[in-house]
Amino acid sequence: MIVRKLLHTRYRLNDLERSVRFYKEVLGLEEVRRHKSPRGSELVFLKAPESDETIELCHFPTSGPVEVQPDLTHLAFQVDSLAQFERHLQSLGLKYSDGPTYKDDGSGGFAFIDAPEGYEIELIQRGPSISPSNPP
Image (cartoon, rainbow, N blue to C red; front, top):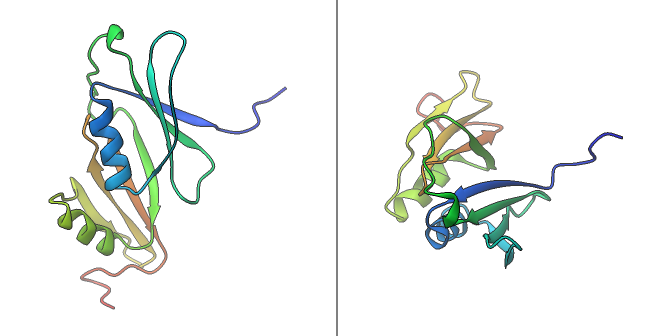
C-alpha cells in the first residue's frame, strides 16, 4: 500500500497566537479547527482558500523552545500578483525579506517573507509578471 495524499504539515512554535494572527491576517488563511492533543499540545489547523491540505501550528512548551534554523524549510503559496501582495504587506507595515524576483521571460516570479517564528514563506506568481522590466 502507498500513501494516498498529503493531509497537513506541522510547524512547532513558541508563540501560537502571534503566529495564528500572522497566517490569518497577512496570508489570509482560514482557521479550520483548534484543539488540544492527548499529550497536551495546543494545535491550530489553517488552510488556504483553494487548498485541501492544512498547516498545523503546534505549541508544546514541554518540548523546549523552538529555534528555527536558517533555510531549513519553507511553505510556498501561489498569489495572483507579487506587486499587489507587496502593497498588502506595506499596508501592514511589513516587507518582503527577499525579492521579488521575476523570470526573464515575464512568466512569473517569487518572493519571500518571514513568519514570526523565523519560518520562511515563499510567494509564487505564475503567469504574466508586472515588474520594472515588464510594465503593465
